[in-house]
Length: 251
Length: 294
Image (cartoon, rainbow over all chains, first blue to last red; front, side):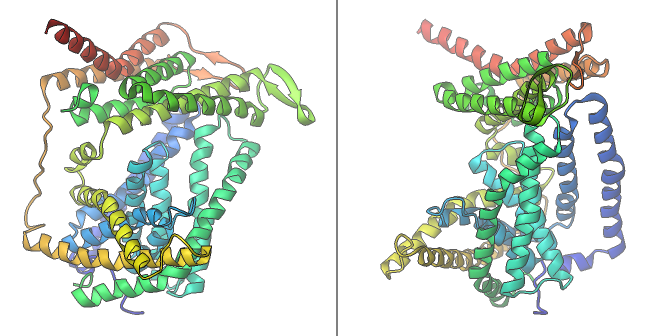
């Protein structure tokens, strides 16, 4: 259990801790204190239905620090390939269950990645998978929302595991996966639909969208829970084995 | 070589679509909405030809649904058309606002449909490869891995069929478990491959210097002309917006800006959005003339 795999651990330790922290903080401060309020003000001043575009821009802003921190770290080839493989599996996993309509194991694969490789890798896997799957199904105004929602699933999984709130056991994993899919990923995607399709947001319109999203979210949740139940143990074993056999991800 | 608007530099393509989508999400003024709906439909039809009609018809149904459902959830507005269920008012303002929302929805979807026709993934990675080299490399690899892993999954499924563990028959539970087994095998196989790929990359010197890019795109004079045109139109549009030319309020009462700022703004907007359609049509005419000379 202690031998948790962390992507690019050495690289992170090499950097002086203080400088890296401050760069991220400066960027986050800029986004939270300047970019987001300015966008809200601008949308409120010059646009009508401004929640549509303002929410989209804010979602994009919040993802930028993750991507920039990853780039600044100059990740090694192994990290990149592992990340790409996990994204590829997450996207292609849909094809394995093509006979089961709406069965998407993607969130489960992202959660497993987040736990095995840490919160940052979890976020990136989720975001890149969301982006790539839209190359197949078509990009749209929903792309940033999906990237953010799936990224959050991976990020939260990594964070909870790091903090010791989540263990690599079936029951906690399934509960966590179910709650995250039902209460984070699903509602985020519903909010995107709400902002896209309603002219004013009233309690009734919000209720209509979120209620109509419930069945879809329920199916998505059951897919995540089932996948975590059946496949999480062998997956973790495999990730550990690759680490032992090739000495990957610990160097 | 790609024809028409798609043959222009990826930066031109991307900047146009970013502008069209951002403006499309921003303006609810009816004149601007009519322009963007009309030109996005035209562009989509020009890019896609007859095959595009089906999506256009489907989108019209969605547009009607969004437009008519919105007033149901929106009780505000001054002019009551009729009341329904428990005396809820259905107002003219809410209906118009719903139409505007539906138009916005339609136009953003259509611009994205055009984007999907024009901006292929190689153009995207070319554009952003310089800013985010590591992530765009990941993106490239994932785009290759997805079809590759699908083939691998099929191979694994075939091998399992030979030992009588086909995913095609059996109870739902058996099929589900069989699918999970395929997923699991796929993971170990791909991770094994990843180890080899990473070692190979490292021994060929990945990370030892700045990455260079192979690209087949060149910023030519016509790209510069179109970029300048787009920039001028966007600047003019922004100026008209700051003067209040795009203002439109639906609730509680209707106010739509009129006057020179609106007129000028819609001219700029129209020129901006007409760029791909004009290029497509212009190229079609040139081609016809050239052919008639043969």
